[in-house]
Image (cartoon, rainbow, N blue to C red; front, side, top):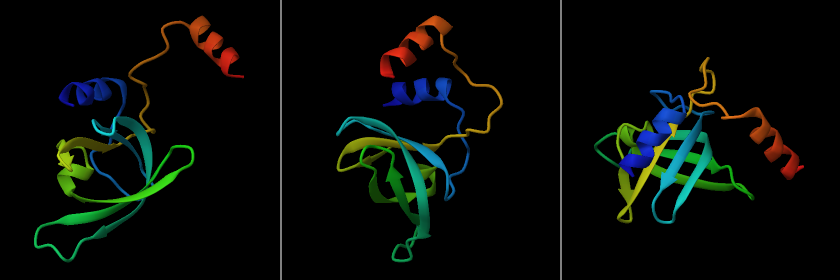
Length: 119
């Protein structure tokens, strides 16, 4: 998972915080997934002594799936890889307002060919 997180950090600009309305990258080993999610709510879990949050997300899949994960601040902001059910997970908000993308298509002709194939 550490290798995947490093690759994501090279490809994407991330935010330091996570707020309602953010798009996050969600990575998991089992079940294996790498998807975007839209944060629809963040509420303090008052049943716990430490700082935990109920993070409501809509996973941007077809069809979209709603889920709520209870996470600490370090987990919901990508500061640490965490486990759920013994399997590693990673969540971090993407900064779509960054001025320069970290990666660009290697060749416009390859991109154009891909776009033609999906039309």
